[in-house]
Length: 385
Image (cartoon, rainbow, N blue to C red; front, side, top):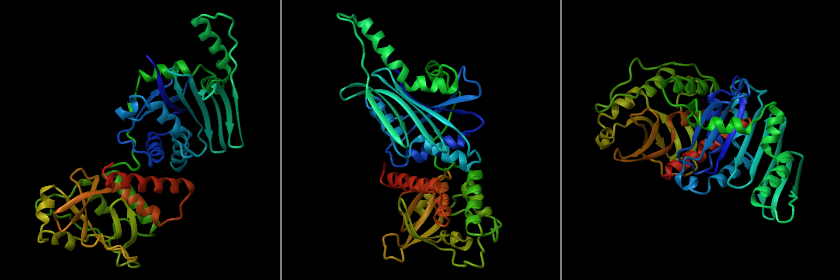
């Protein structure tokens, strides 16, 4: 049975799970991969190191194109290890090093990388259009050469395999990684495939009340506001629908009374179906949905209104008379028109808040990548992808 996988290797004290989660989500932002799988296992024989294994989770891809997907993803300019390094730096680990291996024994494909803030080094062997080839790549150079396999006349199949292995072994990515880490890597990685320690969910922003509160505090800092200023004493039920816990956390943390910005409008938004000008609903506006014509249908779907969406100052009128509502899970957002027509908004609640904070701040290259991934992923979701 063929073995095909892609894995990151890293020091466990340098790369937290959150960096893995966000990094892979950013790298996959423009890919139509609905259910990516990521799990972590300790790496036997390499003390202090773990491996994170990625798979598309798409049966159609896994049925024959998984290796093609892995190769394209890891060769992308914004590859998973690059995005994970960016996320780790944001979380306080700027000096981390990550190794990566994309491997398959179905064909000869053994592609190893070392990534750090200063750049990368890549060693690989693969089946090219004209036969086996080996390469070494850095940001400044790329050398690829054909591999000559010295076969005796009339060699048997076993002899051919052994000769091929001798020829490619010095050039393998796994050979490069073994030298870098001072221990055999390939066998340890194959063993880790069958000993997962934990799964890591691939998310741009974590869900839940604690994460929402953190995202609101981030937004307040960007806007130079105060946490919890003017927060309501309680969050009302609307048509019998209680506010999700994530929204309660939002209401406690948001700055509802910034004297420098009494209108509190977020203009020219464009993330999924959230387009135009957004204003979070105040307590009296929330209670007004008890009388909002047609809101019974939204309430029947356990949707909770959180913001008003109006047309763009640049003329985008499609968003007029729309409400952004939060699902009962406290994560998914919906755009509701006339209280009856509800469609997926695209971003999650946490993603919308991160988008707002990024939109009103000076962005680093890593943050540019993140906001781009937020918008791409939201677009795919709003279109049903």
